[in-house]
Amino acid sequence: MTSTDESSPTRDEHGDELRSKALEVMVQLFGGGVKGEEMPARDLAPEFFDLASTFCFGGFWSRPELDVKSRSLATVAQLAALGRTSELKIHLQGARNVGWTEAELIEVLMQTSQYAGIPSAVQALDAASEVFEG
Image (cartoon, rainbow, N blue to C red):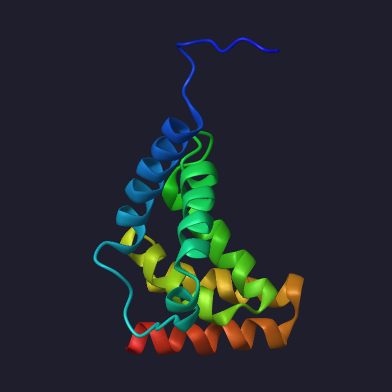
């Protein structure tokens, strides 16, 4: 039998803390939401999205070693390299909300061509075009 330290947070308290941190990050990135990106999967499995966003934004994005702006740029580059254009469009909007300019984001997407291939960069730039012109 193990003893419980009464000063340590319970699982629910830890979950609430992660949700709170996740919300802070998501408000910085997405403010009142994102334009043009419907996610039918969110309606199908809302609990999944709650868990995923809590863990991702509350657990990783809120770590102190990198600020939200830097994490945003890293995420844009990774999504571009992976060809995940639906998520990329959402994170391009978030990147603009935390201070990255269109010119800086385009430069990152162009650099993707050297490490993930020209087709990945073209796909990412097409996604950026929709976001920036929309």
